Length: 254
Image (cartoon, rainbow, N blue to C red; front, side, top):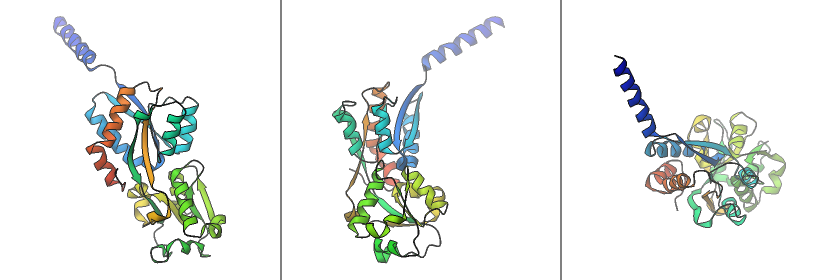
């Protein structure tokens, strides 16, 4: 019996050794990518036994500042292409490790029961006195906030609604303002509107000619502890399975 137990213990130890230690990939991802990034991570983990993707979500500009200050990320998935290019320009990554993975789409989200007619009147309807607060991500750090600001200017309504703007630190916080009643309308990435409380609202696409095309790219950082794994994850995101996931969340594909 003792021999049997010893043999079983040795066999278990051998299997554990064969499996090897778990590998962790630290990925910084734009808040607007939340649901898609979580599904992408699960898909990648399913193909890479023993790998765990640790996602940190936030504003792309905030991540850029953190990366400059040595934040221990392996991969940065931005809501635009500007910040990954800045990472490369700062010598913190190689241009060969930066890839466009999607085109983001901007929408206006209205809570259930809202009578605001953006679909037929366009963004000029936001100047109505009935609209008290308009939520968007802070344009200083969030690409979709910049896109929303550009759309308001292109529609000729920015000055009229400037005092109504409520800025969130990220697209996710702008969404929270709207779902909690702290805003009458929110400018959001389409990708955020597919689940949770946002799924019950009304989504109106912002005409794409009103804002610059939102190219979203990812970059493997030069300081990555798992560079090969980070490149494999970025390849998964831009591959057939990753593209199918992104398309389900309303992203345009390069």
